[in-house]
Amino acid sequence: LDVLPAKQTTPKLNASIWSVGDLTIGAFDGSAVKMVRTDALAQDCSDDLIMCIERKAHIRAAWGGTRERELAPGDIHLWRADCSMRVETKGGFSAFLLAVPRVVLSNHGVDIDPFLHEGGLCGNMPETRLLSRYTDTLISEIGALSRQSVERCAVHVRDLVILALGGARDAAHLANGRSVRVARLCAIKSDIEARLTDPGLNVAWITKRHGISERYLRSLFADDHMSFTSFVLERRLMRAHAALSQSGRSVSEIAYSCGFSDLSWFNRAFRQRFGMTPSEVRARLLELSPKQVG
Image 1 (tube, rainbow, N blue to C red):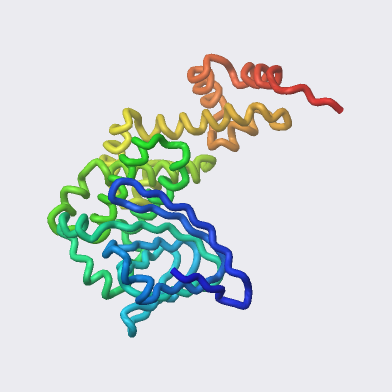
Image 2 (cartoon, rainbow, N blue to C red):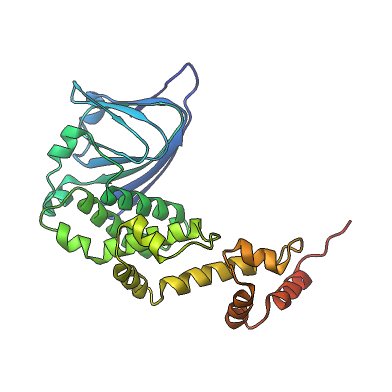
């Protein structure tokens, strides 16, 4: 790609790229830019399908000489690596990139030509959202994961790509398969973390947001040998435990700020989890903390 500034400024572009199995995964961000792949640049490239998941910028993409499309945050821009194209971002951008060999997709019954003709996927489809969220989570954790774990997660990403593109032969199998269940549970846990301090966080909110039944939600958490309730309680207790090192807040303030609405229940659950009361843990943490000199 040739990268040019959208305005009379020096373009800023940060990129991280990982090659995992038959996938290439990338994370990009920068200032407003124009990115051009000319015929000369494209001629020596593979026929991989490139999927660019837009995170915050509106872009205008052009390809095939005459076709153009506007894409909003959440949409996925699609093109072939061996074809010319042009992209212009409207302001600073952040995006994830996936490169998947065309043969991998065709082997799973995916015909990419109709998608290439349209130039992208809408971000409001559940399959697209699932792919985007899981890719986001993988990239944010990739530095802490073992190579084996990254490779396993890359298989999940590949399966979600196939699902998003409607692999005719495998869509039904993948929809009920391990990769999609792992990705969906990951997205649910992310939503729980984001609303952990809300006492109103409950099963009904999660199932409505993700368009799933309570039974399916229970089965997803059962895969991890836990329940929705036990996961929420554990995360709230861990957050409260960490907050107890802050001497400026009372135990009750911490409990309520972590999503507990009943102080006596919080104290019982905390003692059962950590073997000490919140006050005892606070005293221990403050005793172990470095002494302030002033």
